[in-house]
Length: 377
Image (spheres, rainbow, N blue to C red):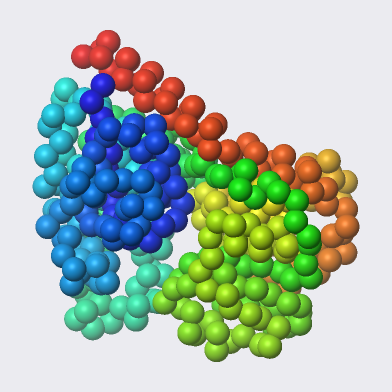
């Protein structure tokens, strides 16, 4: 079975790239096709640059502003020639699923999300970028309209969809009218499953972009007066720092052992985004740390909220709205029952999402899918 891997781009390393890394470990001889990459990020995932093929967008001057070229991503991904491969395994949150294939090939797509800014977040994206009126706004709306049409029309190129959560599977159905198998992403639970001393701070870990709602978390902790550590970087950092009171400290980007120490030392992790899955809450639970999360999206599949009686299962607290008041109320509720949470129960819940489970499920899905495909062709 001759396999090719396809991924949108390898610039910053997040949850999608952790899946790509696992795919590479499962199929180490499979070449990678990606629109563009940062060499340091590609090498961190274990890929050899010599076996990685990029698009015409791979130019030094474009890497810092690659998102500006979104309208031509569909054209760029269609230029990859994958005709020699038996199986295409795409890891897609934007256009990777739209590569061209032929009738002799099986295309399996691990879909992290249908393109957010073309579907669910279109109007928020336009508001956040002040693209509601004027010529630039008209061009942006036209580009997103075209992207939606291309995204939906390219979905039949995928033979089998895998979703990273039930929430994403529902969005795949809504956008493409396609069924998807759910295989949760891999989390390195062993890195966090080491007892460490608990501190007196709360923790927020995220890339600082608008939809992660760091602004609400900081505002809530300004009102509460409790110590909050913010881990992460991004375009919203300056604006969020300007909101912060003296009880909020910004630590920048952290990973691996440093992040594990911070997670293990926190009283709770605050998670305010509506994510398709959300690896960070699982990492916190692997460290035995409760999660105070927005009660929609993937968090509802990874965090078990306390109801005052289920301490043999509870791993966190949900807040119902993305608002400062809702976060404040949830934190106060957590403070009232903080001592009831069981560290080992929380860790045990996180182990459901470990890396080996992911690899076994992906291998079974790919090989079973290929056998059925060959039998029916």
